[in-house]
Length: 169
Image (spheres, rainbow, N blue to C red):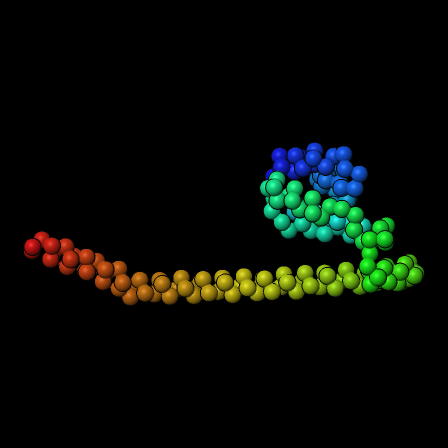
């Protein structure tokens, strides 16, 4: 992926409105990565720098370029309010009218909701993993019991009979 990403960065290097860059999350960029929820590498984020989103598309050059061309452009935000529809403008104005303490509390509440959803998902996946492991153990035990009940001998007898029948011909 690195060569394709480098090629994409080169293509957008002179763009006044589109930034394609990389950050070394293991060195000087670690605080930036931590602040934006980067947990694995490589991670691609996009969107408003104040509210980056996870990229979910293809990782080859063509997919990355198509996504960049279609999505990396100024979007509705407090910095580009002229690009917002009336509903989003009203929402931005509501948030701008909030005190810093109220805005911090609202952000914290939404982040906690998101973390709760992530935690519930992880618990669900752990439950599925346990079900899978239990079912795999049950299957292995059942197959072992079938083999122990004489399946191997039955197959050997059948093969011997078939071989004997061919010899008689």
